[in-house]
Image (cartoon, rainbow, N blue to C red; front, top):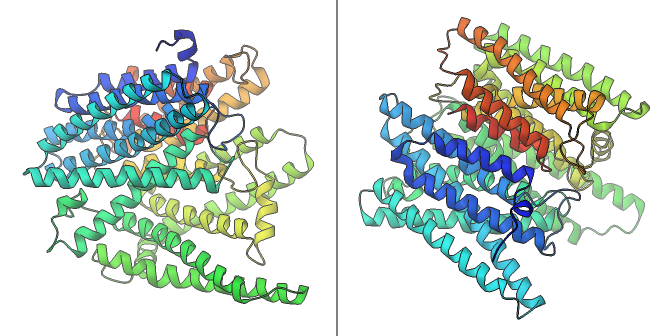
Length: 567
């Protein structure tokens, strides 16, 4: 089966391949199996994306967005591989232990297994749809052979790589089983997301979220099992060695997110029972029902955050005090700096949100430009904290994410008395990428800034990597949008809105910010190992991705930029 090169290679795919080639070019020979697997994954995802674009949409995805399957499939595995390259440098310098390197190796394979599992699922679905539509469709046989070849080669390479870090064949089999569980969980989760939240995301965006959630909660499960059952079950069963140091802040954030996940599932079940036994025949009865739902919601939320989540935290890590008390001790260990920073944040948020909300209601300014002011707000809030209080910023990001999740749950379930008010307020800042069912833009901005910072914890010999989200979104994306909207004339494509002038402004602004930031970091004692030519490649690649992609750029650009900065 032949594809036309012009049809195959659009702008987004070309930038994604450039991104993958840049990472592969930096790989040491010891990571050759990982390079081969990433190459196969890229080729397989490109094939699946082309077939998906040629076939009838099987899911209700976000209107106006391409499938984005290739970008969604390679982003997180490439990020893990870049981090693995960074840790390989550290291991060669004897700055980390072998266990940490093996842990990151398993993280890479787990992420790859998630993406590969979803690609297999999409291939099967499209193959079945094509056969049902036309039983004599010969290309389906070719599709099956090609997909099967990729899967077999990928599996062989994975087995070889895992065998090199396992002591016995039994341990290799256990790790393969663990990866298989990741792939199965990813398939079930992406089906659930696309069916439960139709028209809220493209397939690529759902794939990125799916692989990230499965990897994150899989690591939490691994940590829990290895701690509770380490006398009965080999830690290698769950892909990690518990001896790898985990910070209290990381455990607190994981515990809070786990608590919200448990709370959502339990509350949904309780509400179904409540609605079954409580009739709503008149307005007074409906009002009492809403009040009852609200009491159940806030009571169960408080119990989960104060009792359930801290219990898990104390199981997986030996806290000296209750985790809630530990948070207060951490904040008040440097009360002047951290409380002053909190006051600074609250003042900025209050003034900015109040001002922008009035503008959004009374002005004709485009929503996309109004939202870019929040990107500038993120720079004002996060940049000083990242330089002077990075650990406190880690905790603050976790708290902000928890607040956003609670508010979104309140908005979606219309919890009295805040549900409707939160919905009206959030609707003032939405654009075409949001829907009434799910508003994701504020999550993508927060996580776009937070993830590079969280992933830079531990060994990090590239001082700019924590700033990847703030630089790419707060400065680069904002300048590209504003300059392109006001001065842009030359468009990258006939159908797109992105302009060459805007992209050039975004790339230039990020490079200018880096030229100011690097001497400042040097004055703070950071050892600068960032070279300008690789930095130029990283900035240019992320800028081109912003210009060409139809996906949610807040989610992808920071991860791509972070990955390239790690090299």
